[in-house]
Length: 112
Image (cartoon, rainbow, N blue to C red; front, side, top):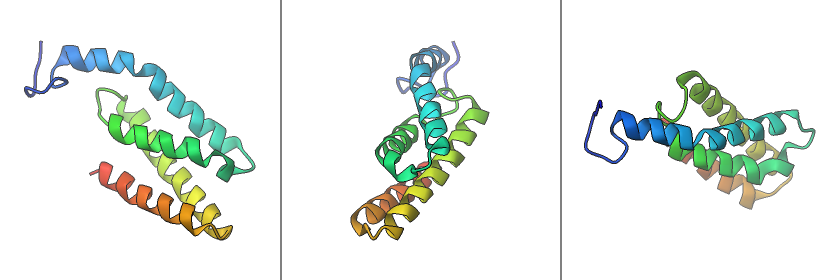
C-alpha cells in the first residue's frame, strides 16, 4: 500500500475506495453540465449548477477524478457559474448575482 500522508484518504486503498464510491457523483455532475449546456434557459438550472460546483470543490482531487475529466468539469462549471451570474445580473436580481459572484470567488480559491 502506498501512502503519502497520515490522513484518512492519504493512501492508495482509501483513494481507490473513495474514487469508486464517488463515480455516480462525478457522473451526476457531468449530467448537470450537459443539461445546462443544452438548455435555452440556463438560469432555470442555477440551483443545480451551484450545488454541482459546490460539491466539485469538495471532490477536486486527482484520485477522485480522472485528471482530464477534472480539468474539463472545472472549466465547464466556472463557465456555467459565470453565465448564471450574468443572466441574474441582466435580470436585475442583485441578490442572486452577488451570491453567485461570491461562489465564483470561492470556486476559484478551491483551484489553488
